[in-house]
Length: 344
Image (cartoon, rainbow, N blue to C red; front, top):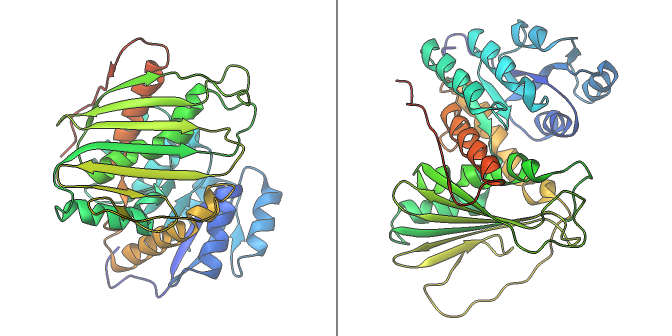
């Protein structure tokens, strides 16, 4: 896409309009500037028709292929189940259309690498991955402080990820693929340092955990430079949704997720207070809006991928680390992360 062919308004085709897809359609229709939803598809056509009715000027098609190849679609937003992401994302690359894909990029590291390779062979940049935390104001402030050297050399990254509850089918593997995956991407975002190993520690479990679920879980990641990352996952707190992140550096420590912005503990004093939302959507509503707006702006100016956005390569890194984390659930000690070379 070049400047001479850019539409005045980016026309977006949305694949999958369940909870996240429907949220995105509503977001683009009501709050995003310079874009509109033009085509919608879902496995359940009645669902697609209901969602399309709330997006004036949009139409419904039966298949993801029709969305991707439609002449009135300039960019594709994928919110279908994860097992379809590799096929749909590579199809968008082949069609030369920018794509914002909700995580995961693919269900296995091998499939994620196929997407990376397809994009590399295309000669363009098309894939943005929906790790919305990168667009959260607190995450951005902490990242900027780290990049500016305010905290010195990062020594530890401590993460906490807590949910009020999860459905009965939520198992230990989903603790990795649905929850820990966000902290795995946070490692790439904050540290830009590949994870080389991961270990699972199983604490005493809450009485609210479903049968077969260890809750909480603690993952310990180690990066190539030696930074240690801890990730506490507790998904049946019965209290609310909390995400906290602390970077401990050689010159100071800083924490986000306390409802008061970034708290830097290089200086004494400070207190906090606030309420805890019931799930992730209120907490990251502004981040989702900022992510989609940045993507739309990048598509409109021809760069296709926003500066803070996770890329296909980031999606592959997350898939590889998560695969090692799942293996570590049943392994004593640390499991090494296996990575292929990044295509040029």
